[in-house]
Image 1 (cartoon, helix red, strand yellow):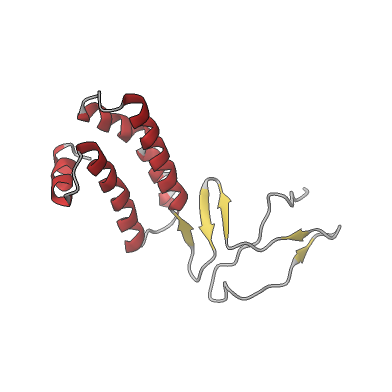
Image 2 (cartoon, rainbow, N blue to C red):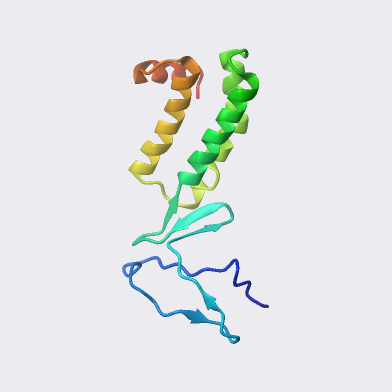
Length: 140
């Protein structure tokens, strides 16, 4: 089986993740590049001391799909219809692959912020207490 050198990378995870390593060469002299982040099955693995994944692209995908949905339906649809649309079309983009690694508190806060900003936009408010009540009321 041959290695596709355009799609293959080297990444270090562990105590010495930031130490420069020797290049890995194939029999025909092609090098595998060392990277600090790589995408595997839609999940962005980051080079660090412990196994970590980046949720930046998941958040970007969520924002893109929410804005696309709002662009199509605008403010004409009822809130519960909009919430159901977001729940079925946009939330899976945000949660894809999260079971692949343990989330730390910063990641959880970042995901919570994304969902809270969506509620603030939907209900036109800047108060987190109102957002929390809406999330309870709509069981989101």
